Amino acid sequence: MLAHVDMDAFYASVEVMDRPELKDRPVIVGGGKRGVVSAASYAAREFGVRSAMPIFQARRLCPQGVFLPVRMERYKEVSRLVMAALAGFTPLVEQVSVDEAYLDLTGTQGLWGPPRQTGLAIKKSVLAQTGLTCSVGLAPLRFLCKIASERDKPDGLTVVEEVEPFLVTIALREVPGVGAKAQERLKAMGVTYLTQLRLLGRQRLEDLMGAWGLRLWDLAHGIDPQGVGGERGVKSLSHEITLEEDTADRELLASLLLGLCQKVCRRLRRHGLWGRVAVLKLRHADFKLVTRRTSLRRPTDRAGELYPVARALLDAYALPGPFRLIGVGLAELSPLGSGQDILFGREANGRSQALSRAEDAICSRFGEKAISRAGALETLGALDHKRQDRHNQGEGEK
Image 1 (cartoon, helix red, strand yellow):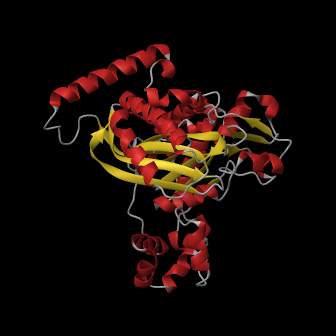
Image 2 (image 1 turned 45 degrees about the horizontal axis):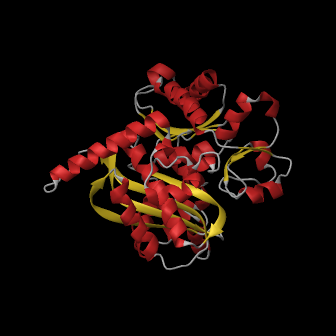
Image 3 (image 1 turned 30 degrees about the horizontal axis):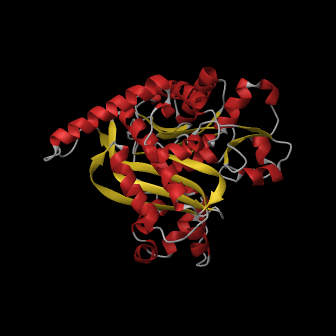
């Protein structure tokens, strides 16, 4: 039996816990006038406020809401308590975000009892450790756990003991990874529930959706070989900034990009990682989000190597904007020094590493803005945490 544990409106719940006078009030966590909602309490959701909604829209829907900035360090602190509570039930805990995790409970029935009893014990332990509620889904298959945990929020518990009867109740909108466009496309074919995909046939699904169609075919038949992988490594790391005013000025965007590359690479070095794939993120004024990525010749943890590649992606993007957000990241991360070593230029590479270490030491002692490349100086203020949307501070780790 596997379990998915999902904290209820986590950011907002932490804020209410720290400020009890906000209980039962619509609490909305997100940054700035131009940012997006990072979390909304259940009281706020009654007004139609949802995560990822623009803040200005949330204010229109819920003018009486309490709007608070993201406090990521506080949420991480509480998250560590949550994960410690879960680790008391099994060593196989896979944390997938700051507020959710999968557990493999195979072989633990002798300790914790049958699934429902185990689920209740998990909820009780998390509440005791953090003062917060969570929703738990238990099922034989990983993807069913995720769906089950959403079925009875907040403070819910759903146990799936028989797969087929539960499968036939699953709407496509509940299946992780099936977006609005795919739902519309399948609805036009008369398919709104997961098991109805069986009527289309395996080959037709593959023709329609490629490898993802084959994955859906398996899910529709209750096949999901993915288990719980234990603690995951960070797969990508990024930084982004929502601009105070939309802009189409490519030089301004390039300057911001350089500052963001510096921040990404400093964080990578703190983690002892480097990355092979550069990622550029742009959000248009109409909220359309685009990403562009390209592989590097070799992994890097240095802004001087990341920036030219990210700048090339920016220059190659044809649509003129204006843009309201820009971000950059590195993906396909691995431990620093892993993979093929540099065959040529070892001496220059050693000097570059020494400069990076010196830069990190200065920033660690005097702050992020103590040292910067000249091209980023004009816009360094735009990266000040006081002006940056708090939801942009990470969490770019996946």
